[in-house]
Length: 260
Ligand SMILES: Nc1ncnc2c1ncn2[C@@H]1O[C@H](COP(=O)(O)OP(=O)(O)OP(=O)(O)O)[C@@H](O)[C@H]1O
Ligand SMILES: [Mg+2]
Image (cartoon, protein in one colour):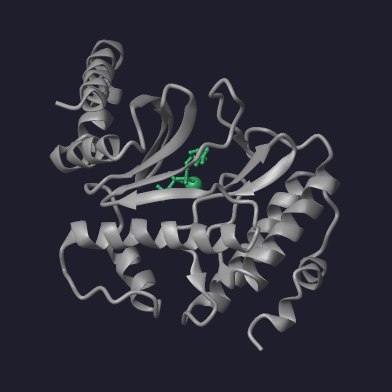
């Protein structure tokens, strides 16, 4: 057997037993995400040399777990694993159906999740190619997305703005609007879930994440999602004591040029 697979296998086993001892609640999450297919996908990624070791969790979200992976014992990668059991399939189907890039006819939940992960990968790629500050996507296989790890060289992840307030909020807000404008006008996407949880503060520069629900500009709900994003951003800026109105935000992102 490939030594890399053994290593990943060992690490995964070790992680699960460590969790079992530590906390029952975590064990539940552990067994939930590491179902048979997820394990097989992890082995596949390991065999393809994308990943050698799983090195602890960053976050347990509604639908996905984000873990720290290690490649070649030196490079950190973010491993986002979607859980089949807790995903909102109705929402996924609705968002995917209106997207001309996808043609998902299947009723299988797994296939819908795979399409969803692929959508996040393609959205990230599109943003990254247009020089938007997002994690660079590495690969998407089944329910697992590998992406550039945003954090320091010791493996400490950058925190969402919600947890790490910017030192200079006005300046940070400027950068957020600069990135958002590129996201919309260059990558031609609407985020759809813009919040202080989905903007990382990486050394005082914003990194936009969590783009699985992001839609292309001609999606039927693009305009509605954009308006919601703007209102949410306005609230977040207010909390940061940044004085800016909704109209000013719209002006800064060239709002009236978007759907022309
Ligand atoms: N590339 C990354 N580098 C470092 N940390 C990350 C990265 N991507 C995500 N994270 C961390 O994981 C958390 C959750 O990620 P993300 O927002 O993509 O998923 P989620 O909110 O759990 O997704 P969903 O709401 O669809 O379940 C982020 O708030 C952030 O702390
Ligand atoms: Mg999120």
